[in-house]
Amino acid sequence: MKKQTLSKSKKKAWTETSRAIRYAHAYDGDNCTCVTCGLTKHWKEQQAGHFIPRAQGNALYFEARNIHPQCYRCNINLGGNGAEYYPYMVERYGQGMIDILKEKQQTIVKFSIDDYNEMAKHFKSEFNRVDELRKNGQQGIIEIQSWY
View 1 (cartoon, rainbow, N blue to C red):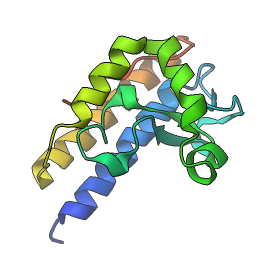
View 2: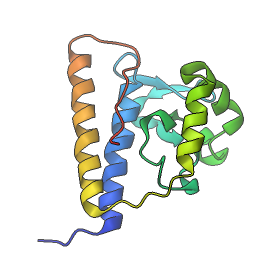
View 3: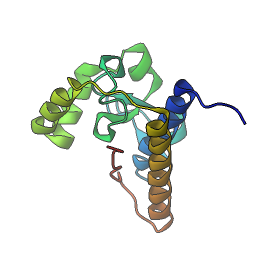
């Protein structure tokens, strides 16, 4: 049996998180819209972009309210397109939630392999929950619960 590493566990957790977030935003079960430029594509063709960049610490890396669908151009080429991301966050959650996220950003968090494995399991479960809702005809954005 291969030994699990922290980096492999983190990557698996991110894969499941990204997949769940993008699918939950597939308003018709297939397509989701980039929150910063409005480009609509199949959810598998979009990326999961962070409002507060992941480079600013682990505390918000897996926080569902900090992650939303973005196209490659906005997420990568425009570095998250923060100027357009901010109005989306204000409209969706309000300034109060942005303030909470900014405060949480200051928290130092260190995750273990077990933590990442639990995150992966949690977000896979969230994906399956969304899939079940989609199969029952639910459309629109479905809220995803963060792991912590």
